[in-house]
Image (cartoon, rainbow, N blue to C red; front, side, top):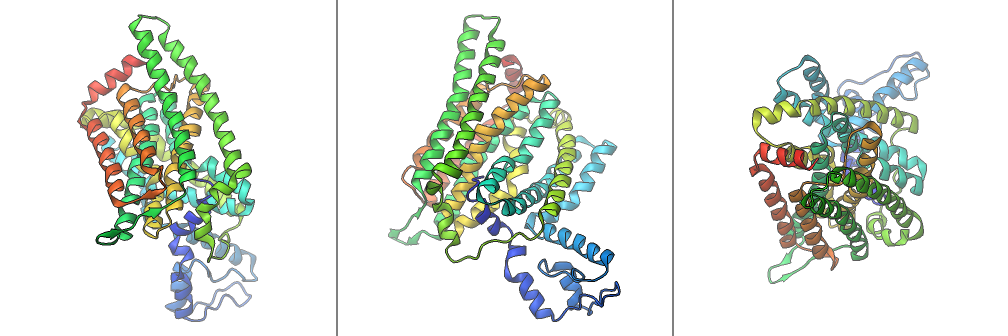
Length: 461
């Protein structure tokens, strides 16, 4: 997601922490005795129990004089703040079940499904911990951290799949992440935001956002589209001429292109965070006019510990998820391309998608666009070329030569989105159009038999 808008978006996605519920709970439930200095926490029945469990701003025992009690209270405070950071965290109970399911070799469908739902809240926790650290680093370094870890879950899942030689899944998940952000998320933002703010019948209104920012990012998306079209075109020419070195030529082209895209992404970060940051300030201007500066709810060491633990859990669940794909494809008949294109992108972006729709409904379209287009830019210019380099290092021949239909779907999507956002205005009809295109593409991949899609991929690689 957009690194400049991440602070404001996180404030929208953490209602259980930032909202008045916790404060109101504390005020209503009465006085809490935090300690008597002897290592005991004095809790009044009912009110103190609720505060201890659900008030993320106040945890009894934090100021206790006993070291052990104070550290136990702080550990619980960090756990509570993390659990209450997002609504999807109620799914965290799936994490140990998913690990046990994978360890004991349960049915592949069960292993995939359980770990699928387990990674969704882990992605939200990962985003929350990253944001907590970035608040301590300042705007530039915080933006750089958010830009780096903005799609950490997709990166972890893809590296695991790349290690297992599941290159088709990696490519499809990268494309799916971009399409879900450009079409599904942006479409839902335009649709629901446009419905709420449509105006009176006969004199309808449109929501507005920064057209300059949208056009800049769409230009980058068009370039990333060209980086897929060129390898596909070269492969077609070499294949038609019967060249025996076509795969090596595509590999060389892909690795060179990946390096260029990574350098371009670095230049984009300098453009966004330093030299032309004023172009992106509009994303935060309206959101922050009447709001106090956001303060971190935990220290950087605690946030770092949460980040490390969550990353390890994501890697474990991703390992079991990817390991069950082959058996799932064989038993269900669904192609790997469909799993990568439609299902896996949901894992890393579900909480972020909900946030984008919420801020669009609240008429904060620059923030919503920052989530949708910003995340797409990261996938196209950072994650995908980085995976090509990782594949180069570990001996997996990941290339930018996508299957022809995938390339066409991506190019058409970028073209439609570019025309849609160029005027800096949106309405519910445009949202419905983007959603319709996403559903059509999803249906096309679902309707294609697994053996046809997989065999075409094998022939291309």
